[in-house]
Amino acid sequence: MNSALARQPLPLVLVLTGPTGTGKTELALQLAARFPLEIISVDSAQVFRGMDIGTAKPTPAQRAQVAHHLIDIRDPAQSYSAGEFVRDARAAIADIHDRGRLPLLAGGTMLYLRALLRGMAQLPVASPTLRAGLEQRAARLGWPALHAELAAVDPVAAARIHPNDPQRIQRALEVHGLTGQPISEWQRKTVGAAGDFRWLRVGLIPADRAAHRQRLAHRFAVMLQAGFADEVLRLYRRGDLSGQMPSMRAVGYRQLWEWCAGRMELAAASAAVVTATAQLAKRQLTWLRSDRELLQVDAVEPSTATQVAEILGKAIDSG
Image (tube, rainbow, N blue to C red; front, top):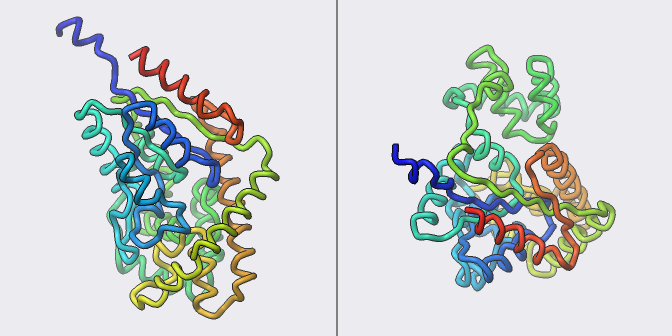
């Protein structure tokens, strides 16, 4: 092999992540004003059309200013998996590199990031019959009861999956039912997929969690003023969506769906949104703190944008 070709650096990919409500979108746009970036969304809810306010989706003006990928690519009645994200994200990364630009993955869906960085387990295909049976049992017993069943057959997976996360509980029980093996064992055998890129991972970490929770409550209040409740009500009135669909299980949408259905007052649903959002942020922080290669920066420090720009500039120069 030609030694000059052998020394070619791997293509650079920037990842900007952090808990919900830490300003990832704003910082990504600031970086795009200084570098030839295109943004790839790492958000499991922003893929759905019509879910704009509650997902803090970049505005049409922002998306006209900087190219964004993997936003508005599914109808809320459809599903979108981590495997599909890995496929689509890798295609977008290659396309951006081919045009001489730099991909910036921005978002906080940790399952998607983990799948992209570590690879996807070759799990068995879904069984509609088995899934239907699990859904019927969950309707009768509740998902926490099925989570307890998962803990009995796969304590490792159960420790990672929240008792109110039906999609992941269902998949873990489905895999065990189909193969007799825990999904955690399948995942343990996964081969990483990050080796063909040079990754720069930056995490926006709130130094003061109490202050961050207050910011989350304020952000939700702003969303309500912007029409978030009306957005969910429009989705509810479509008639072809249900509260069990992945799109409507997103934080904020799930709680306001209960208000739309008349099962909660708006004030109670709003309080539930703030609590669920804080719980999501806590889970995201736990995952981020386990990433030893993550460069952590203060989410609210005034110099954060300058600091991240300097880190990115050095990475580009070193390539």
